[in-house]
Image (cartoon, rainbow, N blue to C red; front, side):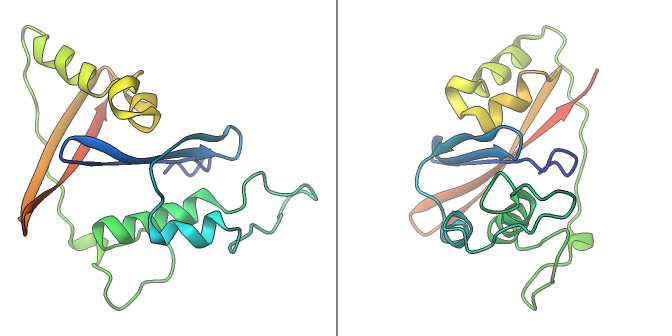
Length: 161
């Protein structure tokens, strides 16, 4: 989510395959829509959450506000939201600890492989749009076994110059 441009991008991979990706903004419209939407997306896509114009008489260019849908995506995928009404089952985002790592890659080979894996052709525009301008993309996989399927979350950190 990017609050300045009101854009939303997310992608979900299962077993290494892209199953759903959504990338949109009011300026560019829907840039990517791959796979079946999740249940939490359906009312928004059906126009049940229209945006009331605030600064103009012109209608909002999308049937919903991307940041509102982004908050629901955070709740559905991670169990918390950053802004909005907190539900009883939500995790307090201040209780989520993030760790930072410095990655050394003296030859540059590992970075080239990571960039290739996250290219638009491999992960869709939601990933490629952000990695195309990145100097270094660091990917962490945090997986857990659930029944006979392995679920994993890949967090892509984009580090500047």
